[in-house]
Length: 93
Image 1 (cartoon, rainbow, N blue to C red):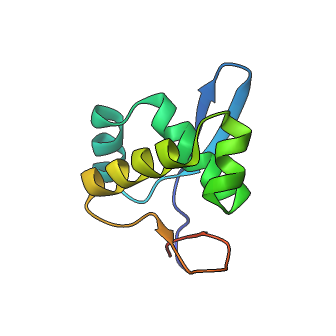
Image 2 (tube, rainbow, N blue to C red):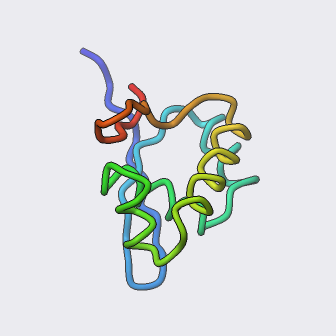
């Protein structure tokens, strides 16, 4: 039987997010180098399925959100989302 990844809760002002941890090493890497704002950006893109909808929800420009997401992915060394033209963005498996 496969064990489930541990679940961690991230609290932001007025909001609570549930996050599944891939590995201890990954969470330490995220905690040390990624701001809470960037966590919120990643969450919003995953929830809304597009940069435009997430940017509108967050009240930021789409290019600023795209740049922030690219920086997070570059720091982690792997893509967080599958990007396909004309389709919703999906979290990578």
